Image 1 (cartoon, one colour):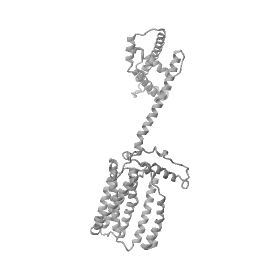
Image 2 (cartoon, one colour; image 1 turned 60 degrees about the horizontal axis):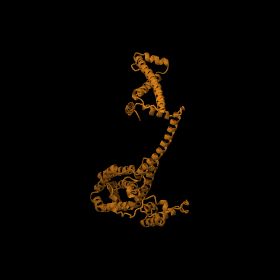
Image 3 (cartoon, one colour; image 1 turned 180 degrees about the horizontal axis):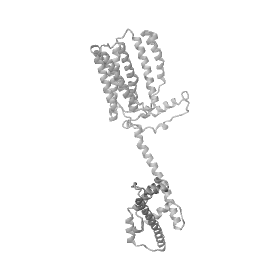
Image 4 (cartoon, one colour; image 1 turned 120 degrees about the vertical axis):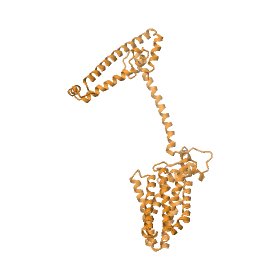
Length: 457
């Protein structure tokens, strides 16, 4: 428009022709249903949702009623009244509000430098307006491309990436002005335009995105009003400070802007969070940890309750199975079940400690069996195994070592087999004595149980 209109009057006519029809669209806008639900205006929220689901938009045939959305938020008898101080009610909100204040103020200072640096250009103002529009269009497209192609390109990366570029461009401007260039020279103005477009299309949009995602719905409007107020406050400071400095000491105006950029960059590196992909918060209770973190305890409680119910049901099934196996064994039936070991284990617990197999011996036997099987597997064939065993250079696979371990293995295996047979005989005799009415020695039985307490699971 600026190139083809060639004068300011035509420029503003076309600008309003484009912008005025858009104002009609505001008549179609509703209040945010998230905000209405958060404020317990459920009837109004249903009206908005039903209009969105109307056939003229998407024809979902959905009909929302108050009971459908009444469980989303907790009903409060008296709605709290939120003010500017609500932005500082928690440590997390206060830290974010401070960061947003610094960011918005820095944005205004950089924009003020651009406005006052280009305000004295009258000979080719249309061309600079054209360049302003070109960079303003290209910069968001580049950001959208990076955001779409690279999942790691989040809000903090966008924040940290925009400010160093601005600082570098302003550093070049400072060097050019220091070597004798005027601030309204073409080279300097183009650098200032590029810096400002990054400031407007990347940095400022990032401020708005973070404000949307970090503040709950009930105070999000207050947060936006606060950010806009800080923006205008920075513009006032620019009128008071930047404009006089630019005329009296040109280099100082760009130095001031660069200092604020660096301060914001350092603070943002430590204080600015990554908000990409985070759920929007609605209630103030979510301001401390966020929506997902507040949901986790409830989910864990539900999970634990469901797990406990399943465990109770499973234990009941196992108890019935064990009772059935024990009843079959009592009748003399041979049952192939894992509960046979548990049943024998309980009976062996009543035996003298001298007839039980020590647990450490069982563990030692398992270790020896594993070592022997590993040796044979590593040695390969029997011929290779004999060669390795006879090799004098091998200390691990020496013949005496393996022979000793094999002997211990055979002894342990034989000993356990004898003990198992003896234990089976003792369990049968004790069962018979129990049925025949024989009574065991109480003192011996008590000692056996106390000795076995360290082995029972």
